[in-house]
Length: 259
Image 1 (cartoon, helix red, strand yellow):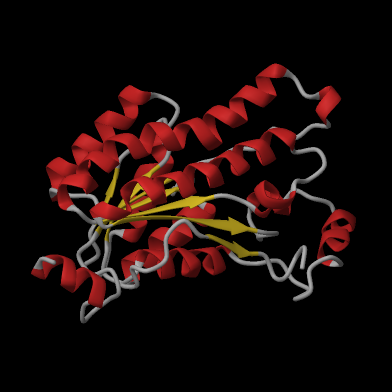
Image 2: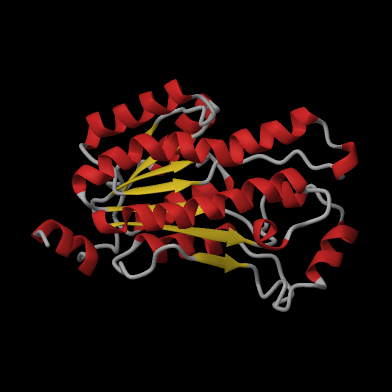
């Protein structure tokens, strides 16, 4: 084991992921931004990436203070050329990629018999196929380093299903299978692959729900409240941090929903 790898696995003074380079897709706002903020506090160099170039720049500018190292790289995760350009730019800037968080995602909810093929395909492309497109060039970098942390943001819906979200559930379930397979294929190279499966989280998406629907959902959550983006970010930090004996795992962060 190299000295550099030992240092990464045992932690560093000044942060659990000090000086590690983290790419977080869909990090212009919401859960992705919360993940970026937590990794920054723990010493990482962070890549803010979002399909919206303006949001990417604004978020990177807001976080790039107090000595933090942040760059903003707009990226359409469904476009291989855009992804390759992002990874190339990150490696040119910092020379490596230690942490990849596949967080970008959308919803196009509808009951199954009313769901259009376009609604189905848009969610599969953005929530599942994008992970394939982003992870592939990043894994080339991590394999040469013989170190890496891949963390995929799945969903409790991908584990248990949810009416009106057959496309989303299928994509997130596929992401879980993707996660477990990468764990098997890349463990020998010092790369772990895990998933975080959020439950009912307080984001712009859930804030659009009516109070009645929110209360119906909360009735099923033993902790009796929505989770926060920071709850998810802390789970990501655990999987990105010094511990290296967790791989192929799906960590549900859902307040006890479905228990």
